[in-house]
Image (tube, rainbow, N blue to C red; front, side, top):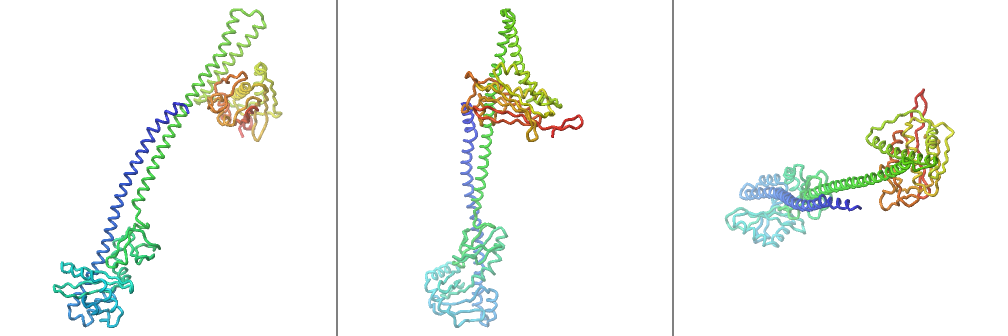
Length: 538
């Protein structure tokens, strides 16, 4: 890579890439910190929602304890009517019990049918209470400090869900009250409406039993199997159950992670755009530098090309003017050289002017019916002396069919001359040129074959670009040279002009070549048909 391009690349790296990398790292760090803060706030909000659900469930239980305590102080409850009403309104309570915490074997059970005299719970509950006397003592301690706590108890052996509390009294009674609850009924019928009101179709709140795949209750439209990984809180009234909450249609609240991922993609996209922009700027500058170099070579080559014929014209004309040539034969030879070099100079200038017009879109073609065989024959006739003078032997194989096309005679002549010039310029020992005309696959063609140096496949792809010369290609490519070892001179416009002319005639130019085996250039013109006096392309 040229030193100027290396400098440009380093500048672009400093100007675009390093700030982009620094900004990306800083932004990702800031985004991560912000998203962690968002996640913390979000989780706190979820915790608040779960707290409100738990608080509501305890409010329900506390209202039950108050109703039950009042019922025990009312002498009418023994009639059964008040008892039935209590259980019918609070049907999540399967049974209620009253017992003495000191004499735990003394227990009374009540259901919606009144007092229960024969039940396995009469043995299980006293044993459960006796096994957790420290918890019972804390209940008394709470009451002494003016706080009536509802304490859940759970029996692994019988799967009983108990709520135990103390009656609100100022004496030192040791009586314990309690409820045996149905968690399914409580969650679905009593807690469910509140959960739905809180969720409002924005969250999915579920109640799970530990290790159970299917939730006991959920606000989701579709029940998902598997243990939920969403934020969870145990139910205060049922330690064996827990509440989970997540955003709608998400298994766990990855809001912060998703926001971080989105910002990460945006930053990556921004960096990609910056990289693409830097690459585009670098590519453009590289092309401009390459074009500047090519133009510089072009000016140098043109100057050399012009200087040579001018020097010859000046030398031979000066010789003739000073009458230093005595023989008439030598004079004629010098006149011929001056004429040839002037024609060469004129051709070179015309080629540059024509290219300039074509580049500016000012060149005008004059299309008319012309015969390719006649044009090629005319060019070869005018080039006969030049070919023989260069030591070339040429063959012309015209088509037996009249090849009439709709074209510009002057530009087609110029295209053929350019190809002949290239054949002459890039031929060394094998100075033989063949020119053919014919028909092939809907086209009339003119083909010029030489047995010169040939063109590599890499150069064939760019040989028709303006200013391109094989000797000006990248260093890894072979530099073509003349027979005496000097690089071929030229403007690098010949083949680009030929392609421009063929494009204007809606034709194509094809190249078949192999290094050291010669090249075949074929000009393909669309076949024309006659309509009255007009000629149109098929």
